[in-house]
Image (cartoon, rainbow, N blue to C red):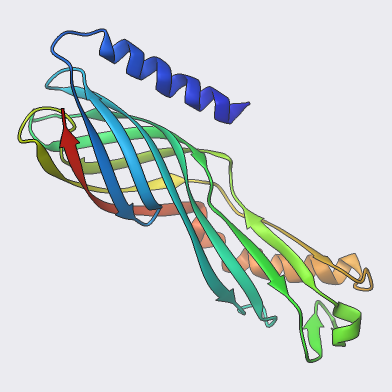
Length: 214
C-alpha cells in the first residue's frame, strides 16, 4: 500500500504541475549508485520543480565476512517522487524525495567443506543450502544536492546528484534447506552479518546523466 501511495503522490504532483502556465519539462537518463534510471521532470517556476523517477540494477557479488562463502545478488533502485528547490534560480538545486526502496541483498551458500555456524561446525550434508537475504525499509526518504534543470535552457543538458537514502538498519534472514541447523546457531550467523552491514543505514547516492528538454 505504501508503494501505491508513492505512485499516487508522484502522479498528483505532476498533474498539478502540468496545470500551471509556461510549463517546461524534461526526460532524464541516469547512471549511478542506484543503477540505471529514468526521470520525468516538470518545472513549476524558476524556483521549484518536481520529478518522478525509477532506478534499477541487479549486481552479482560474493559475501564471506561471516566465514561462510555466500553467492549474493545486490538489488538496487526503486521509484519515487522528488521536489527540487533552485535557491539561485540557476542549475544548482536542493532536493528531497520519497522512494519505494528496492535495495536488498539475496544470499545463498551451498558449502562443500565443513563450516562453522554459530558455536558449532557442520558438514556439507548437514548444511545443505543456506539461503536468505538482507532487506531494508521499503519506503525511504532522500536528501541531496544536484546540478541540472529539467526546464529551460538548451535542448540537452547535464545532470549530477549527490545525496543519501535513509533506508534504515538492514534485517537479515537465513534458513537451511536441511532443517538440521539449530535456530540459535542461525541467529548468531545472522547477528554477525547484521553487524557487518550496520554502516548501510544511509545509502550513498551519486549519479550522472543527461536530460532532454521539451
